[in-house]
Image (cartoon, rainbow, N blue to C red; front, side, top):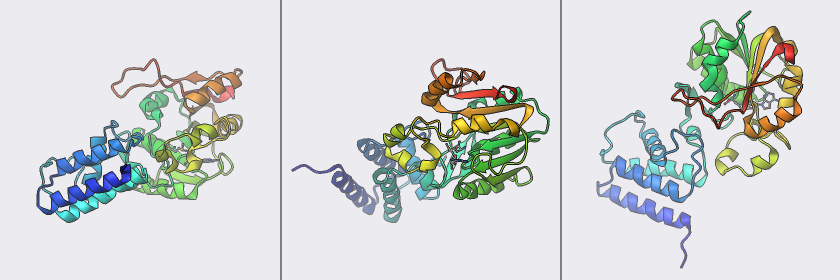
Length: 315
Ligand SMILES: C[S@@+](CC[C@H](N)C(=O)[O-])C[C@H]1O[C@@H](n2cnc3c(N)ncnc32)[C@H](O)[C@@H]1O
């Protein structure tokens, strides 16, 4: 008789519970078992940590027990109720494919903590590896920055934390996303320099900026349909951008100029697939494409020409 993967997982949970009931289940053993179950279920790592399922499993166990994420006593024996709680969390990640950050309501971006829920994209924009370079490239007149399509606010808030003079507007069309961004503004004590504006792109924007930075949705409808379930747990409006993925990029490029100071810059992450189309489509606009700087500081020759910079005068 064939047993489904789900039924096998339930049997594994029962075995772990029995071990816990006789006082023989350690945190390390449970985390290893969780990682094996995640591997069997073929989870998508979805940008969490270094992609290790053991790390994912341990992180979720720490969360379930309200322990600090650098907790060291992995031989700690778990009480049955603690085991039950952790297994329930594992099952949410495995069966429903919920990304870790939506379970723990916490994400790290550029070493900063952000509150996260399912109304915002899990922060992962590769632009963070270039923030210092972007800030150096800017000609500062009024120190104003617009983070367009802000989601959790991770980009604008991280820039505000890097440069104490910046005044930053965070724009999103989604009121639910802006509620999250506002929590993060408060969390980082930035209410005096960072504010949110609900707007369909530039519609409700009234200022001029030295820098407009944006990570808009840029996944084509076809690619979106084929993404793993983890991505389907993120807001569709944060990812999908029409037939060719350029639905937002076109109006951003055509409307940005009046919102930039004369020497202002527009920097946009558009992903590799859209980058190819943009290069073909906008031959008349000089765009500078960035390479991806790996966390160890070296430049990758393969990656990141999915982010471009454009001068206001060229728009
Ligand atoms: C790819 S997510 C980026 C979120 C965040 N900047 C980050 O890097 O994690 C794109 C965001 O754009 C927002 N968005 C989609 N269409 C928009 C529009 N027409 N005007 C403003 N924001 C929009 C979505 O709500 C979503 O929060």
